[in-house]
Length: 276
Ligand code: SF4
Ligand code: SF4
Image 1: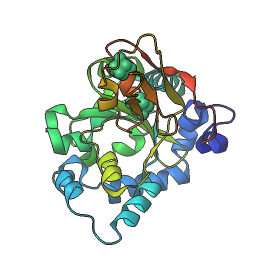
Image 2: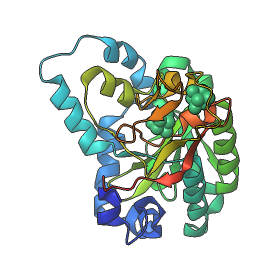
Image 3: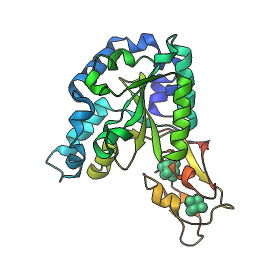
């Protein structure tokens, strides 16, 4: 079990605890204060304010930058990796939380994709449950390109996205423990991930609950999983010619199992056994 579950899960995984998607929590002082600060101070200009972010990510590390960036992420971004099936469970849970089903998912521009790939490829992140209470107050953040979905439509989109793109799903708390957002990250352009690589920080991605396993009978040692893993957790063993997963490094994102041409990897079967 992870630390978030211990504190906020009530015996479940914390992002499957209905209280953490409830209107009552969304309207609490904690979430209200967090959302006001996050949307108005941290990302005030929405996607248009982030156009030079990639060049900023690429420039040399400045004095104290590592600490500053890590602290900022620790305060504002709590991304925990989840599998596609878990995303679907969360979206189904949204369905039972609000009578306004058609507004319970707002799909809005992913700032990272927007700055790197252009606005056409940008509608990938979801505000869920009651997050729209806040996002609609900050139209710049939505960039005028948002759309409302009911959870069933969102599930279809996520399923297709997982099949066709190399995404890493992550729940993102809008003031822990309120599960306000679902990110579908492209690690080639994801700012927090690139910051993490560049600065050697552990924030803001937290490990998911699943770890990937290898079916040795099916693996042919092609190495595609090794190339694709964003966390450097899988390697083809030079002696056996079979892929091996380092469970300590694996975040359970499922990128490897979706890419394996032999269906030799399983990312939604085995739960992490130790606390994390
Ligand atoms: S992609 Fe699949 S077949 Fe290729 S090395 Fe990895 S597990 Fe083995
Ligand atoms: S081994 Fe697979 S599931 Fe684990 S972090 Fe790498 S790509 Fe993700």
